[in-house]
Structure formats: C-alpha cells, structure tokens
Amino acid sequence: MKKIRLTPLFFRRIHKWVGLILGLQFVLWTLSGSVMALLDKDKVAAHAHDMGHAHPLPGGEYFDVGALSTGDPVLGVVLRDLGTRPVYEVRTQKGVRLVDATDGAAISVDESLAREVAAMINEAPIRQASLLPKSTLETRDHEGAMWRIDFADAENSSAYVSADTARFLVMRGDTWRTWDFFWMLHNMDYMERKSFNHPLIIFVAFGTLWLSATGFYLLFKSFTRTDFRWLRRRKKPVVRTLAN
Amino acid sequence: MKIRWPLVIRRFHKWLALIVGVQALLWTLTGLYMVTVHIDIIHGDNLVRSPAVEPFDLTGLASPALVVAAAPGASEVRLQRHFGRPVWRAETPDGPRLFDAKSGQAVPDPTEAQIRALAQRIYTGDGKIVSVRLLTTAPQEMQSRKPPFWQVEFEGWNRPTLYLSPSTGELISRRHTLWRVFDFVWMLHIMDYDERTDVNNPLLRIATWSAFAMAISGAWLLIWSFKRRKRKTA
Image (cartoon, rainbow over all chains, first blue to last red; front, top):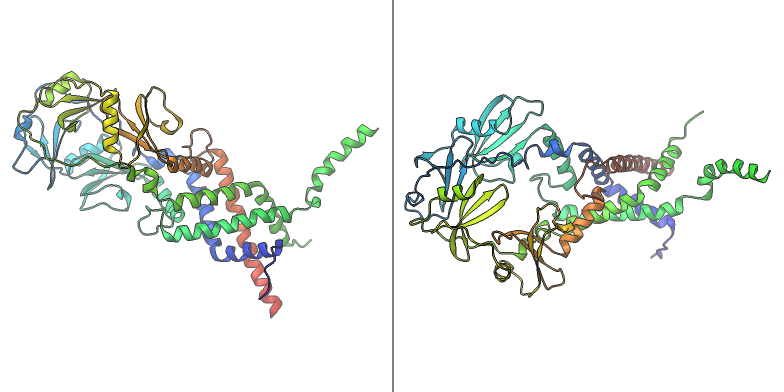
C-alpha cells in the first residue's frame, strides 16, 4: 500500500472527492441560506407571533362554573373572549368543549365563527373557508381539526383557526411558503420539513466539514506572493516620491 | 483574445474563498453542532416534568366574574393548581396573577422557600439547588423575556437553570450549557452578533451570496476537472 503523505495535493484530492459526493448539498445549503437571509423575516412569520388578538374579558356575571361538568372528569377550564362573546373551554379526556360563558349554551366552531375569528387578524376580504380534519404541512406544529380561511391579499394569506377551541392558530402567506421550501432544502427533511437532527443531515454535515476544512487549509497553499503583487504595485510610487 | 475560463474561475473561486473562507468553515462547524445535538435536548425537555393531569372538582368554586373584576384587562382566566390548591390564573397586561379558586382572594406571591420547593418539584435531575435569585434585569440568555423572574440554578456539569415567575411560580424558561453553546453557535451561524435574532442582516446576506458564488464556481471547476481527466485518458 502506498504511504499517505499529507501534502497539499492529498488535501486537494480530499477537497475534490468530497466535493463530488457532497458538493451538491453544499451548493444547496449556500443557496437556501442565501434565500432565507433575503426573505423578510416579518413577512415569513406573518402574524404567527402577534398576540394582539387577545381580547379583554368583559365585566359582569358569568355562567356558573359548577354547571359546566357533564359527567366526564374535567381536566381544565379556561375562560376567554372570542372578540364577540366570552366562552369557556372545558377540557375532558374526550377533548375540548366550547361553552358560551353567559348562558351556558354549547358552541360549535362553524364556518361563520371561524371567518369571524380570522377576520379579526386580517382585514382583507375572505376568498374561501374550508374545514381540514387534521393538520397539514403548513400547520405541522398544531393538532386537531381546523378551519383554513384564505384571504384575497397580496400574500395569499391563509389563517388557521382551531375547530375545537376557535383559537387562531397561525397565519401563512406566500413568503412563508417560499421560505418553507428553502428551509426544507436546508434541513434535508424532505417529508416533514421539521427535523434537523436526522442521520442523513448529520452524515452530510460531517462530510462537508471536510470540504470546508480542507478548502480552508488549501487557501494557505494556493496563494503566493505574486497573487498580492497588485497591492505592492500601488504602494511603489509612494515609496519613490519619499525617496526623492 | 481567448478567455481561459478554467483559470478565470479558479481565480474567482480562490479569491472568494479568501473572503468567506473563515465564515464557510464556521457555518459547517456550527451547523454540525446544531444537527448533532438534538433540539429537544437543547430545549431542555428532559430537565423538567410536566404537571400531572388530575380532574378538578368544579363545585363550590368562586365565580371567574370576581377574578375579572379584581384583575381588569384580563384576557384569559384559567383553572389550575398551586401547591395542590385550585386557583384561577388571570392573564393580565401586566403578567399573570393567581386567585384562590374557592375564596376568590388574591394569592400572595410565592416566597423564596416556595420557589425552591416548586423548582425542586419541576426539576427531574438529582442535583441540589446552588443559588436562588430574584432578577430585575434580564441576563443575556433571557433577553426575549420581560423581568422580573426567579433564577434557580442547580448543580451539574451543564449548570441547569430554571426561571420561574415571581407572581405565579410557574416555569418560564430553562437554560443549560448545551443551550448556551447552541445560542452562541446560532449567533455565529446567522452573523448577528448583537441580538442573535436578525436573520436578514446585510452582513449575512452578502456572506451567503458570496458563499453561493464560491460553491457554484467550485462545482464548475469540479465538473471541468473530471471531464479533463477523461479527455486525457482517452
């Protein structure tokens, strides 16, 4: 076997072969990183972090909490305001029930209520509303059935409203959708687009480290004094005038 | 004059690398850290236990109307437990407040001893509490949160630290060495050395597009060099 000698040529070969195998992902990382840095982060987040939709609860009497139980053990009670009326969220093993907090009537999150909630977040006209039985790629951080309310605005925004609690979940627009595609290229989780801790990315990240490390080493071997001649040439006249 | 493209592109690749080489190396190093250490560990999910879910007895509770009257502007009133007792937790513009769910009386802020007890109950590790402090200014690692909060530090190699609310004693955040390293590494990755949050800063935009140009020119050189070898052997 030939003895391995740690010459610049050897490192150049590593650089070339790792580049051949993992270079495409390196290109994709720089490209997706560039695009994500370019996309306005406020547009990407849309109203996802905007908690301005919390409405203060009105004063006055509320429906008796003791009458909320329907036999199933109650695991949680939350009183909040939908913007038009206060409601109780009653959580049991079976899920969450929504109850009108003034008269105790059961509330179902129908299309008109979902539209009402979404309209408080976005003033643009609503194009359409649809009920989804479970979360999609756009709402992968949430669970359960939900309404998707599409708006006729420049961003093609979609508001998602929980079909159980009538809570606003998240807003997605075209900027987010573009961002999310490049985020997928970046995290290499092509199915869920969620995890960046899977074996494939760890393997490629480890391999690419060799690409950048050998490349960095080769920088010191690739440049010679002649490469920087243009810097010295500019200085020369100054020296001459001083000598005179 | 005929342009010798391989030479031009090699020079382009070389000079770009001279400018962004350090950052490209940092990107791969920091990226490797972020993909290797699982995000659940970074979040500290294993450091704390979530409270046990037990059914509530809804009879004889004070009306939330009392709570809304005592905490004007509250947007949400939630039934939960505080040292085993049922309490109403009101989310007000000034932060959360607790009211005894039986009497409707405001619950006094937890004492330092109570904070210790709560922290010990939440924490899953065996380590003892090293220090308990009430902070009025946010340290670097809590800059996204509004003080004041209790800082409870535990012993251990990764210095686990829990942050608890001074009004309700609930867990606000958890920090530990691997999180702190992640935060530093993230700063290097997105090149925002002040706030560590701005992924749109001009420096990052210039560096990323330069790196992309470097990678593309490298790819061109790679394909060219393999083609040339084929031509040579043929």
